[in-house]
Image (tube, rainbow, N blue to C red; front, top):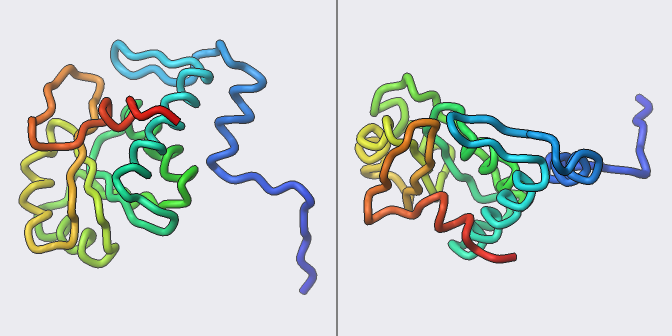
Length: 159
């Protein structure tokens, strides 16, 4: 079998960076009241990657996400790709036992949740190796619990 090799290889982490170069001021994400241009989206993804790295997330680590689609979910996806970490999406319609099974078998170290799924995430985390939970904003305004990492604090990390 013949394989093709390309002198140019691009990762998911590169995709947003390249799009920013072409269309920095074009709107990339709209979610509720949030609208990010490609330049803003790229910057936030970079800062989020730095924040996750500061929390000890390394290439190959698994970060689970129990959330509905949102701007934060999208930024997290690109941030993890830039770190070489693995996104473990968890269907928010599953029950506690099923979510716990995924967390255990994926070997997730962090679980990111949005507002409506906090209690499910907390219950599913029990008895797993998940060491931290992180709060993701959604299109509805919510306040993060004081004892959790937040998207905003992670994205405030300078690169």
